[in-house]
Amino acid sequence: MMQKISLEQYKQTLTEKLKPRTLCFLISDDKVLLGKKLQGFGQGYWLGIGGKVEADETVEQAMIREGLEEISVSPTDYKQVATINFYFPYVENPQKWNQQIHVFLCTAWLGEPRETEEIHPEWFDKNKLPFAYMWADAYYWLSNILHGEKLTAEFLYDKDMGIANHTISQWSGNS
Image 1: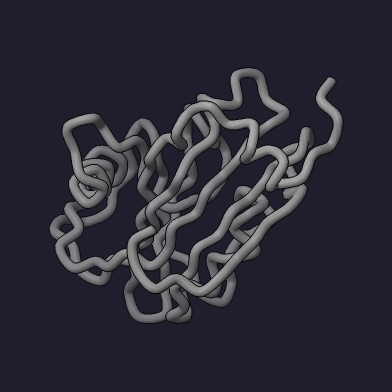
Image 2: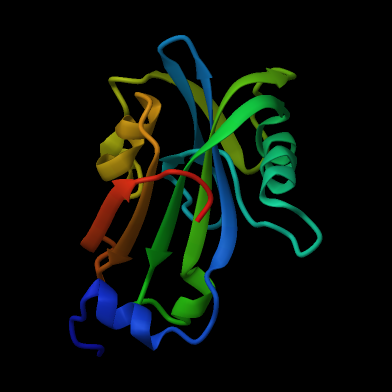
């Protein structure tokens, strides 16, 4: 079993680039759309809409595609508000799990959110988020971006899928 390591120590062991991913939150007044993951990575958790960036896509193209695939909406007015790196040293094949998430807020879209095989969408008050049913990191940053902050963050998960270490700083653009 791997001994406990710090975020900086773990980053020095990486041999592969982090996998790019997208995450989008639809915003309507004081509400945010979250999706309950019905299958796959993150099953059972409430989370933003998003996923893998394919080799032939930009981050924005992937975010739009994932919106269509996961909840049948096409984001039309959006902005990137965060870049977050996630590290999972204690899982089998951590290079597969380690990822860089490009987070977007979306205020306009085509279509109405609907359930698919992968996601059950539901609106939540921005100030009453279901953190107990979300990935542990969301508690540290999600409210901040929903209330106008832009940030860069890194999260190191422990063997129990809690947060072992993290950093959060102001974000001024693409990183």
